[in-house]
Length: 219
Image (cartoon, rainbow, N blue to C red; front, side, top):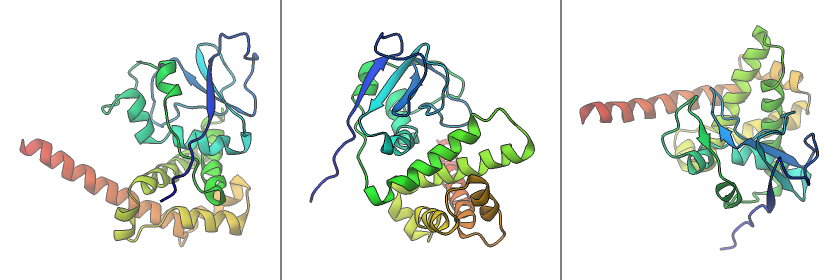
């Protein structure tokens, strides 16, 4: 069976003379000393400060959002930071670890949908306005992003529970277009298939976590 190629990228220190003072459209940045907050935002597309960072550059900027989505995936972050990630704890990120990551290229016909969710999420995350609507948007797009990540790794489980994230996200984008506010307004409708599937995923994830917790307590 043919396997998809891995994405090719270079890693350079932001202190290098080769790097400009501001990020370009083909760059992703990560702090050399990283602490995760409440959201998986280790790899940034919109960070305005380059000091003390690793800079990842792609030859093809069209897949940058997809690359960031895959890098911010919880499974990838565990490979970098370890299996037990503690929020707020400082982790030293080495160049060798970042350079050795193997990120599959993925299906080109679907890449843009992963790119969109990452771009929208980071756009909301880095927006300085933190009113109730902005926080709700952040929560909703973060939840979609996490569900898409889980579906990539546990597709059969999601199918068993009849939970479908990517198809509903793709259908929504194809129907509504690329305007973030229009997408959000549609997602918040009571009968929106995407949001309903995300809610079912959250219930499934909570049940898994409870089973794991019960097992730990039994020991």
